[in-house]
Image (cartoon, rainbow, N blue to C red; front, side):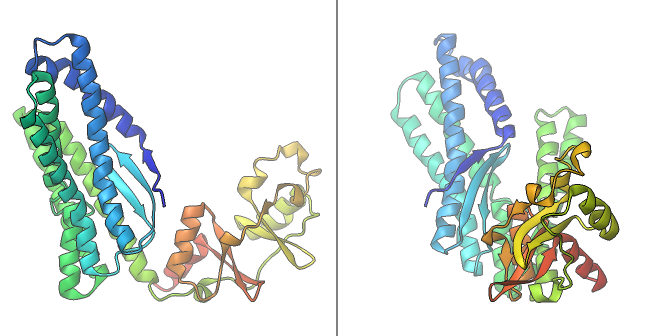
Length: 356
């Protein structure tokens, strides 16, 4: 199965900056006898190979994840590296450790390969190219071993804590907290370095902010997963469903349903047959002057079986489905019949009421 690799717009900015800096500073200094066009060619090639190195790093994570039957939906390359989108968490601490360590080891492997190529070549420009790639992959490998979750080193730390305590959520919180401290160190050291006039200080601040945000998000996700652990869709779903008919006009739907009940969407049934949902987003696409003429059946979003869950489905799985499909609500089915709805707002309200 192929894994799609996507490029975040931030990587395009970095690609341009790397190409420019290498072509105007690094290669002219390392190989001053070569013409400017050669410097720009090597700068572009170096940036592309660095791009490929980061992709190789993420593919190493994905390869190990696939060995443990964890689906990888995509790989996205960002300004500071890449992220492999996994559906699910590692099944054991050992799996977590192997998945995490695979990335840095792959970068260190590439660093060794480029160093051997550097040693085997003679031209100043080519040697400078391979030297740069060897050093950058070495930095990438070592940097990712810093124990700041969700970096690879932080995931190694989580695996160790998980192995010791047997509690995945506790390990995630501990690793995320440590990751936030690492990030704050980068930020404060970067600010201090700015006043001391140290080159690259702003990068330290930016990296620290990036890591802090990622660690905070990971902590919140772990807390959410722990809170919803063991809770089934049947515990949260709404069984008293307010439905709309396909022949109602948009004007009737707005005045008698959306304004009256203040829901974000309603299921549409025709003689007991479920057709789909109509939401506020769908209604906003219809011009106000057409509301008395356009009917619900004209704008209803046809139902898909992938938007169904059973009452025994874990709530966290239903929430993940909503997020991945960009849906605010799902239908709950049993024996081929719709028996209820589960919504994002309903999950949030459940957590609030239960004091979670």
